[in-house]
Length: 233
Image (cartoon, rainbow, N blue to C red; front, side):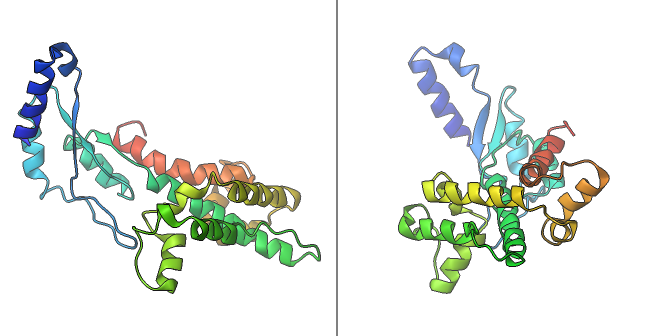
């Protein structure tokens, strides 16, 4: 690690970028908090002790933790305390979005089953069809038989489905989903079944009784853990 920092510092100085080097604030590291399709590796404060002590020998540097997705808020707080002050997050946010949208899709299916008219968004199937039509973003990340691959496309922690939300067909299905749920009021019974945390917030008046608000709240709940870790919540 020290060699990496010093080689980089010398490269800056060789180009006459001494003042720029003073603005470098972090070194990217992997503090053992990776995740697999179905597994998580929790942050271990004791095992990270050598990294923590090493960075304390530099006055102006901290760590950027390469991937902190799915860590508990207590673990995130400990990471910050241990000088992993920049917490990189990505899939945990899109995973929360996907969870919320899937929940809305299941709610939609129940509501439309009570009507004689069709017009379901078929969001989950449209998304999977899009992934199958262009597997470039997930093929080398998932392995197994067809059943296992199907499961990974829907539920993996790595959430490779995040690359497919901008696809036109998927966007149209998503719009149709919100259109249907805007047309048919969602009973609290279904909200409780599929989004129980948001149900409680709606009941207490903390959250608007709106499908989009429920989705935003799912994502915000992840961000709030990071805010807590950084002393903002």
